[in-house]
Length: 143
Figure 1 (tube, one colour):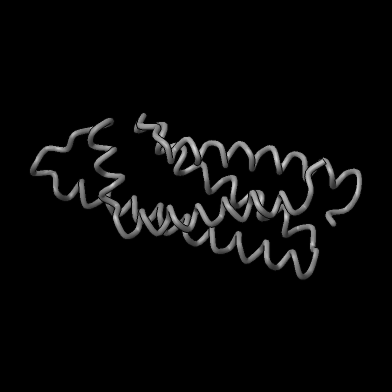
Figure 2 (tube, helix red, strand yellow; figure 1 turned 45 degrees about the vertical axis):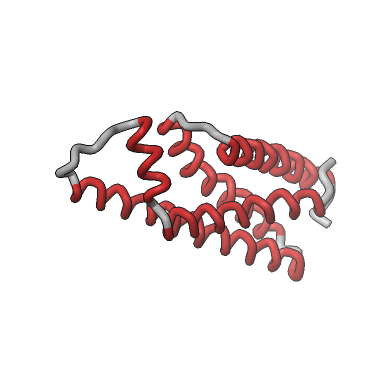
């Protein structure tokens, strides 16, 4: 069985990762654009509107991850105080679905490096922790 402390470490790390990814994508979206341009589509020099639109989408992805990462951390903290079971379910759903955006982008671009491997490892550990935590819920309460 998974211990509650392990669950908090995995999901806390995942949400901090979401916040960092979100800040990076919002502040420097050209990092994502360069990878996209190298591996998916090379924009013509006169396609400034298309490039601006794609940069705005990358910033939106960053904002989405930043907000959900903060909400995930707040809900984890709130669970430590109130022990309401719905908070665990909400954290699992928010965090797992939030990781899908960056993972899909990385796999679309086809550029998997060191940080992307860490991202995939965190995603798989979140899935395993969620399954074990939900199985634990059937045997006894989250405590």
